[in-house]
Image (tube, rainbow, N blue to C red; front, side):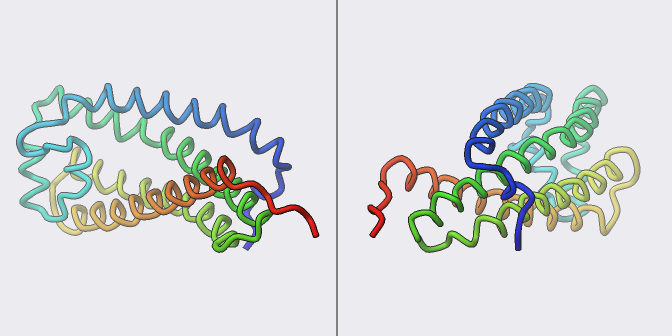
Amino acid sequence: MTHPFQMLTPASARRAFIPLLVITLVVMALLNMVSTPLTTQAAPLGIISYELAGNVAKAQSILDSWDSLTQIHAGFALGFDYVFMLAYSATIGLACVMAAGVLGSRHWPLAAAGAVLAWGQWLAAGCDAVENIALTAMLFGDVVSPWPQVAYWCAVIKFALIFLGLVYAFYGGVVRLFIHKAPAA
């Protein structure tokens, strides 16, 4: 399963990666700043607690712990998160493709997994988008099923795919930095 990032030369991929990483980190920092008021006793992890509420009672408890200004912060964070989705999915996806190139050039196990995990980052962003729709529906409407459950399962899938992509990219990075290619026969 070929990923569009695999069409980039290794040099082009490296040139694209640093700006993508910087954009991702800046957007993440801005989201963290906006989301700071979302941390309450009912939501110790802020927006993540809301994403993982999983049921009506817990989601309602979190929303009740946020005053109207905090709910505005939550709404802005949910909207701005769409920029973050584009950034992180592209950055981690490109990192997975780059890691696959490193692993493939050394004939290491799991080289083929890079393209699958790169596609997985776009799936993670899609799950994130659906999750945000569910969270927004509860924020501006009624907290009713199935919204908390939709948000929960989309968040679980999203976090799992992001985690796998980051681990794979780290694996490829370690191999690139510390394991030299075997000389050609």
